[in-house]
Image (tube, rainbow, N blue to C red):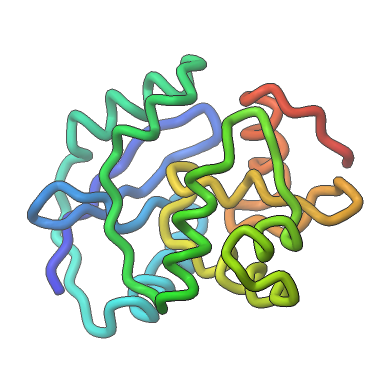
Length: 169
């Protein structure tokens, strides 16, 4: 597979954007977690090639709007993911979590029709290659506490507070 790699400067650090030839977002990760991004791309697509380029203007505009407070702007970004059917179902469910709200792994498991699979949902959440746009940061522990996030807990807290969530730390 052949993808393009661009960068975006955000309030929470430099973000790497991987797009395909059709302009769909395939990966979004923080520059200081670039090795994680490569691992996820390899897991989802096998052999792939990245060509350095610029971030696509429509994705940049949507991210600018999101960071300016228009949380619905992320809905306009077209994403395409690899992964298993179960992972893709979890990622689709993540996109349905409204900004400013959170869900537990158990709640998300119930929504994808696998109420006993909260650990599997957690694993799928961790394998999400498109952070922020596929908002895995909106999933928290059953008691309301922040749990792991591929971009670090400080970023997860920032993103949730940016969206208006009260967070337990």
